[in-house]
Amino acid sequence: MASVEYKNTRVAENRELIEKHVREILRLIGEDVDREGLLDTPARVTRMYEEIFSGYEANPRDVLGVTFDEQHEELVIIKDIIYYSQCEHHMAPFFGKVHVGYLPSGKVAGLSKFARLVDVVTRKLQVQERITSEIADILDEVLKPHGVMVVVEGEHMCMCSRGVKKYGSETITSAVRGSFRTDSTLRSEFLSLINR
Image 1 (tube, rainbow, N blue to C red):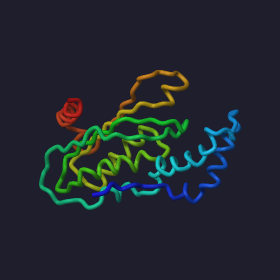
Image 2: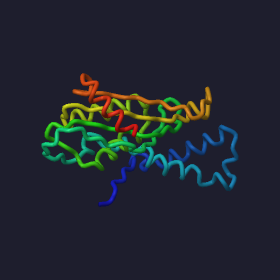
Image 3: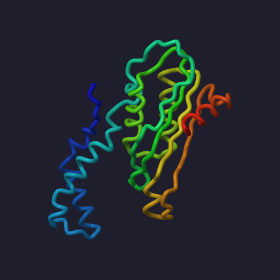
Image 4: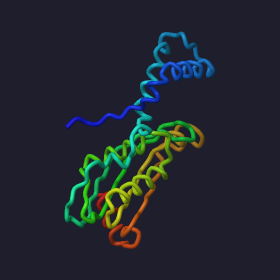
């Protein structure tokens, strides 16, 4: 089955204007916009925006697609889902891993759908805290499990390459819903399994 590739069609519709503005930004920071290495940069940046901001095009609740009736009511974990996003404060990249655990209550989703959900939620201007909560809330709403726990790890270029310049620092956020909120043993099992 082919992977779903989301694109931001608004970027495509505004290609000429975006390219013009990228060219102007290059000029304003002191670049020679007519030098060979930069001639195609506005077009390349615009094509990149189609991809990295594709999250605006899809409804994340629809991404989970068809759910399946399954009487499995034990912990399900999908870990190490790689993501890339853009900080809404500096438009600098941040990236890392998402780990999802849920306790089904009769409904499960295909495993690849979790990776698609992560892509749709992260491919827009974001903050890590919102990514974590959005994924947990969507899974809770769509799958209606007994509980959900999401842990997101991130390395933020706005912290590594500018400002305080703390290279290698990592941000970890978590969101818990349902039985994960009240059952410390369940939380511990999830954390121990994702850290194996």
